[in-house]
Length: 622
Figure 1 (tube, rainbow, N blue to C red):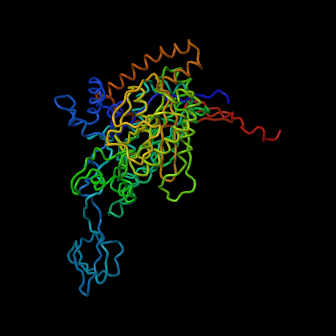
Figure 2: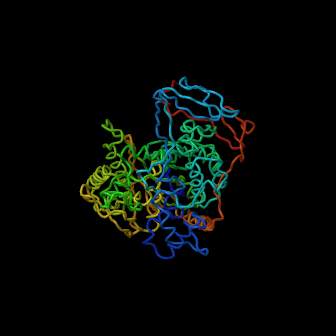
Figure 3: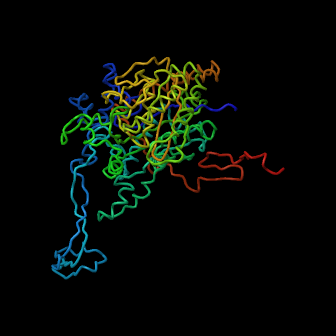
């Protein structure tokens, strides 16, 4: 195989229950108790910038308030009232020989009068309705929700207020924030980057596993008529699952390159990452934005998962902890991976990562947070249950670890890696995934393989879950701290622990011995994906073998200015002086901007060659 370009991670951004991803702030919230005081203060300042005035006292971050209003917690009223969820009770009536009679305003009469109704004028504005026989009504009422915990964005943070959101669904608001944060995190002027690559050498792969299902998207479209409301012209188009990519292209980057979204349920982020890696490796793109955005903390979506028995209910949590029914459990500990547990905890999150090819990264002095070398995807084959686990994850994990071995060698594989487990917090997952991880470690001779399960902090953000895992991995490599599974009392008896390293507390690791990480995802329907990431140290070592000493020194010099810009961006975000990038009706191109001939096309002066060679020369006639 010829020389391939290395997909280097040069930026990342987003937002979850742990806060802003860039600058490793979201990760720092997870390991907050193990940080030094100076690092804690910066983490608090970053969160306070998101959360607004309630997170401050005399201009200083209120530590306990911020800690209490981040990560997994009781669902807050800005989402919905879990103690009083609105719904419609079926209300059948029977006249029993005596008409059901009531007055109603003329404007509220249905356009088609039911045949059982007798309508007579009552006043100028009202009519009298008499119903003989049966009639079904829907009675608006309220009920208590069974599930009361979720991973939510920090209290007070509203991404739609940071730019002219124009009634965008929450997931798209989060997409704009995540892409803008990732863009700022690279420490390079975006116009400078665009001048270095062709307009067709940039890709965006981003989406949502479930689409935009809140009231401003598909959810609003589906329920508007049932609620007697008007369907907006925005409901349908803004609900598409690939719309996060469309928004990033149209309003953040102005990209004319490749685009799309690969959907694989809870593995969707890695599906998109696979597309990005492939574009870089084959040379189809030199810059790729990869991400997902999920906003599922709505009663309708949670009702669906709850009906499957998938979510941790208050009743289940109380039973686990021996708390009398009717009392409130500790919602902070709702997600308990690899322990005695009762279901996963749904969450909202948007995560975005920026990939450059290695030559561009070196040329521009980009900071290298690591490299994304492979994503392996396999289905489960025949299944008894579409939501049940299968054997495909054995294949993806085996391939991902084999890929790491080929890159870092046997010794580093066995002593210098970690695995970011899917770790949902369900009884099925704790058994099946632990067995897969244990057998994989045994097959490759890995002892005490560190297992990280970040859903215990931020919950399960469906399509964005692996994005949460990737951002945490970059934080581990930066700070040298493995987040413990702090929400559990111990590992469950049916969990396979052979050759695995579980820990309830944070652990220090030697950053000089961190070589790789495996990110594991399992999705409904048999969507399994495992990714191989290389640490910044290994990435640098590989590039020093490819490039000359002079080229490496030039990168080091250029990177100093990039790091200064990255620090300035982080400082500006904490100070609240930087708004998300949102360019509505900006630089819109039209037919007059396009000129082309048979061998090239020019768009606004940017030329793309059409001199394409056939990859099937051996099959073509002479």
